[in-house]
Amino acid sequence: MNTFDNTIPEVLRSISPYDDGWARLNRDELRFEDGTEGPRIWLELKFPFVCNILPVLPSQDLVFIEVYRHPVRRWMLELPGGLGEKGEVPDVSALRELKEETGLVTSRLTSLGKVNVDPGLLSHDTYVFRAENCVGWDANHHDSADQIRGVVSLSRVEVERRIISGEITHGPTLIALYLDQLSRSEEGGV
Image (cartoon, rainbow, N blue to C red; front, side, top):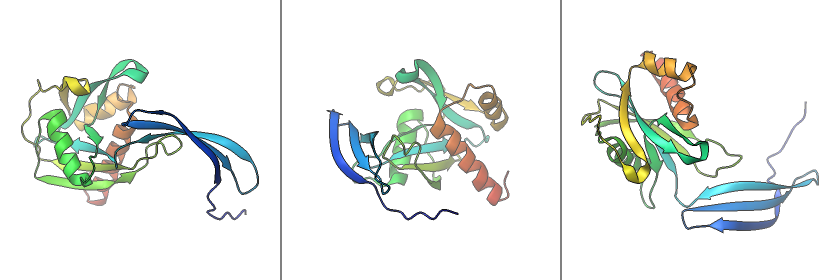
């Protein structure tokens, strides 16, 4: 069996060919412990973290947003979420994003964990929350600044159907749903 230490590769050179104050693209030339060298390209968001929220209505339906994602050129169903602001803690950010993106409020927010969605490319932590007994439902809520054209409530059975059919493919959403399932299973509520 191989044993590895946690030696971090040496950064030989680092350039940032793009930086708009919101995101920076980095290209690092690395030298690994065995002497091999190679480039790594990664994106650094200029925000302290990201949060994703799983809103649950009193009916137990889950709330999704319909949002346009230009890199994949389509409208997607996703859980609400967004970027934390400097000086803001993750749970406060989650409550703010829930209200901004869905119009919903909650008095019961539960942390489901912290994940790194794609650490080979992205440098930020994502905090995942479940917001229960959400109120303020408005199917007509939209936020054109964030390209959100609507808010949709779905039963858990319908969510599973849409995942299996390929209609829900957003990685952070799938991670949040899985963490929620694990949490509810641990609590005996699945």
